[in-house]
Structure formats: C-alpha cells, structure tokens
Image (cartoon, one colour):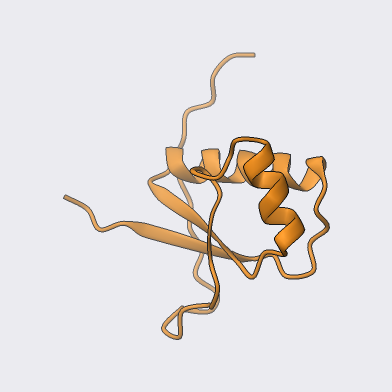
Length: 85
C-alpha cells in the first residue's frame, strides 16, 4: 500500500467565488486521479462556506498550517490518460 501523498495549496487571500471553487474542485479531481490528495491551507470563512454550500466539503478539505517538513520545488506529475471529449 502506497503512503498518502498530499498537495497543500495556500489559499489565503483567494476570493470566495464560484470560479475559484470550480478551479479548486477540478484541481482536486486531477490530483486524486494521480494518487494525491488536496489540502487547502488558510481558507477564509467565506470560502469554506461556499465550498460547503456547493457540497464539496469532502473533496476540498483544509488544514490551518503548512507542514514544516514540506520540500520546496517538488514537482508532482502524473501520466493520466486523456479521455475523448
């Protein structure tokens, strides 16, 4: 069993709008398909409320602080197959 790989995204200062929630949901889906989990760092109360209103609380989880052991410049890539439109 592979360890859970987490990608943390700092969203402090991100506007609480449907466009931002949509972009975060798409990012979370893409990461999940590549074997990663998305964690939002420092979301505003308004952003969390909008995420909850959209029913995406399970997909867009958050953490309050950035892990101290994170590696700068780490590049996560996946070889996801593209489906036909």
